[in-house]
Image 1: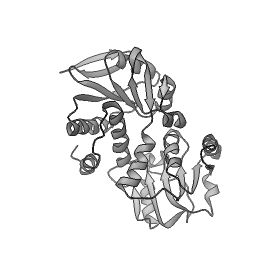
Image 2: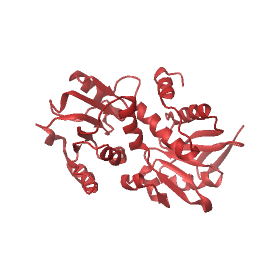
Image 3: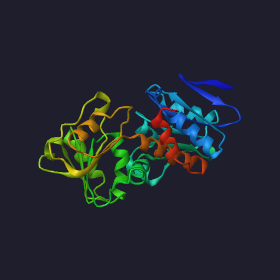
Image 4: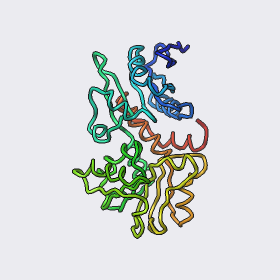
Length: 290
């Protein structure tokens, strides 16, 4: 039976005899992560319990420390705490250091907090392995310059596109984000209006516009006839961005559900030392069975 504990105003559901993990977020009730990790645990015969923890905006550091004190082994971090998680870590893996954001935490001897970012790896793995789409040598456009975009830029650079442009409603944010990675790759940043006359093999939407049923103001011709579009958001029905892409004849229109499962599998590997099979879990989520 779960024993409920309280840290500040944050509630935890811990299970005695299991290794406890959680996802911190606000909001977090919608999270599919507990179901995903339950499937991973069943598949790999791991004795873990994974829960979703709602954290008031000002209590994130206290919540993480309290979870560690209660015996928690590790945690995922979702919006809006990924950059705060980065600051909380004593040590970060190189991809998290580059991204400036952390979505995976674990605890070491003496209470040290370690961090990684599996978002980019999850995205690239879904694109390349699950969808068979090509990033190497592609002309790539990333929409957005917030935390979601920042978290995937290092992995996208590592995938070796030919050209990489970041576009944002506020041009200065895109220019600034591109400049942070200029030593790794000649990324350029611009506003949406500057995309007139440009075309790309692939567009990845990392804005929150789809949450509001909106699409960034993209010019006609920005996606090539044989190109593909990917939305980091996911829903039962195609997002507004994917509907926009389909209306322009794009054959490969992909939502972020596969990325969600792949980044979770990478976190699970970090914590448990075994990588679960992701395709069965993606299929289960698509079917609505979990």
